[in-house]
Length: 237
Image (cartoon, rainbow, N blue to C red; front, side, top):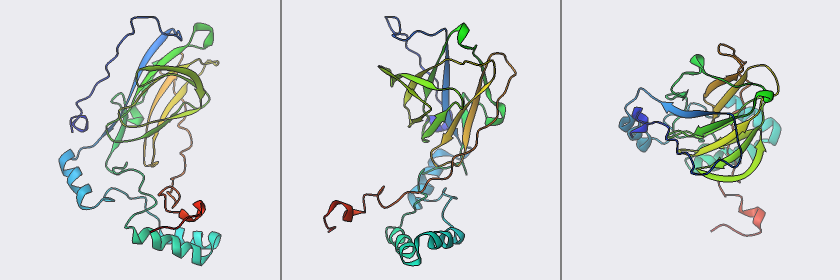
């Protein structure tokens, strides 16, 4: 529970040989999930009720909407199966933004991390991104592709992405090369979409960029749970 009590820090190990992909500046981005609750008490609540922190469960309005779209029988059967398993399709994260505050380098979203980076004519920058203690984040920089060059300390074949998912304690190194003289938002949204952390990459201190549109709340399906055995031509026993 040390991380949940705020005992964490980045540990940077410089390689003996030059990095395969050069850059002009390096920045560390640490994603974390902070709560004022006692971590052991929080764990106790989860053991008594797994969905204790899940305030994004489906509503009656969604049931009616699903019935209109999929039919009453299919909708009722879907809801019945989830109830029989004592599970919920919105059970994406054990602890959500209801109790967590998501931080980037220890800062709240409204007190955003500010890091200067120049347009490409002045070179590229590397972001060393570290995952949290409990939360899985989806990270993107709208308008600025990221080239992943390292995963968990191991060099990888560079691959350009618009978004990447960082699980607990994972690390990624990415290269960014801005083409415009403007600010970019580093946006890390929790996988269940209950909150986010943010920072800024900009040519000059004090610049800011808009928070992008939030992604819709995800829903698990029976396929995700491995329960749709009929598609494989077999029977469940």
